[in-house]
Length: 399
Image 1 (cartoon, rainbow, N blue to C red):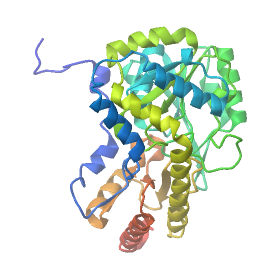
Image 2 (tube, one colour):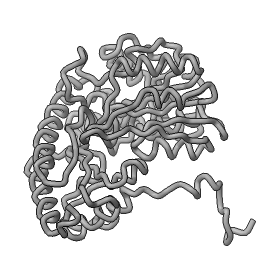
Image 3 (tube, rainbow, N blue to C red):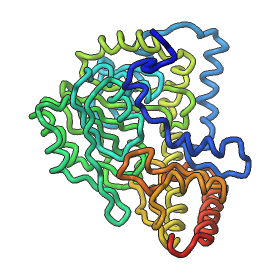
Image 4 (cartoon, one colour):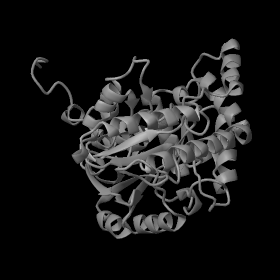
């Protein structure tokens, strides 16, 4: 094999697009004058009580391998937590993973063979569609449509795309980047259709607690778990990253039919072996203190959203609607159809770091994602001031 000529490796891997978010961020990382809102994480550190749990674990010398499926204590804590939110979710349906991304990839490895047909609802965080392509799937995207800045799903279009040949549906709700959120009735309709076609549903619900509406009894976004049977062809992905301020810890979990769990443990062995024990100890404490941590996080994020969105809406040429969930404002700048170029210009000319819509799907070209998870509301206001000043300097035809 000559490594000087392609293909060096699997063509499906070589064909993956590099992150457009990173492409923009790389232009401004290390610059102290840039207000960065491009990555999907809060700038607030993990609560001290959670960090201390990991420190205590390390001090005890818990630096060895753990069970493939996770510490029994953490699996039980996740079971209790999920049961409180969605009704009974047994430990036998749970696997602890090394982050939400790892959980999604494990699900893709478990469910997709090369050549399988996969449907995804887009725009969406690019990892979800890329993982299907890594597995060699044939991917069909069903695009949400913006109506006055609010992204909406045409249910008939989605159901037409899901046939008896469709192996897997990938859906992220609340959605990154748009904030679009499925209703309970829509979830029930999707699940009923997928039962008829024999299609698996992979539901990324990592933002379920970051929900700003008052229309659910448990304070969460609607979940497929609320309408599913235990043995439905449904895998749900969760993470400690967003609602517990633990992005860098790389800790998540999977909910699946109990018949899958043992085999998922084998996949974890061949991927990462296990999540680190001291990280899992921190996860136990995070769940034990969720009443103190998560409501405060959600209340602050709502204040962030309600600070940023009206300011953006007041700028001529900006199109957006408040997100129902998540941590993003997704907006369009009239007259600026290439968001990658626009985002790079904002970095260099305005000191403002945003993520381009093209990172999430072709239909999001011209849109920009602003992560509003900032502990300092004035930082959001300063960012808007920079955007306004930059737009005021643009030729009138661009507005």
